[in-house]
Image (cartoon, rainbow, N blue to C red; front, top):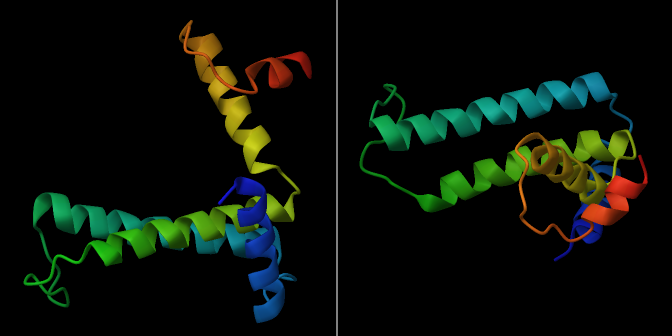
Length: 117
């Protein structure tokens, strides 16, 4: 699956569920909530510290995968709201890291992003 398809599927799901009209502030709050849920799942796995309502007999990788998916969906929703391409945003970040740390790692699309500045 490529990032353009992921952007389109996120948009379609939001339209189907009636979420497309939510403002960016609302979507950002959902993203923060989902990041918190991911953090709780990682904490549970890494420290073994449980809340009273958590089951210590279950170590379900699917839970972690779903939390990562929730974060991605919410992040893509915010990105779509502002019409930000995932490819361009990610390549711009890699470009920034490459410049900042003087990296020689070849990055596909690096020249395209670098020439648009």
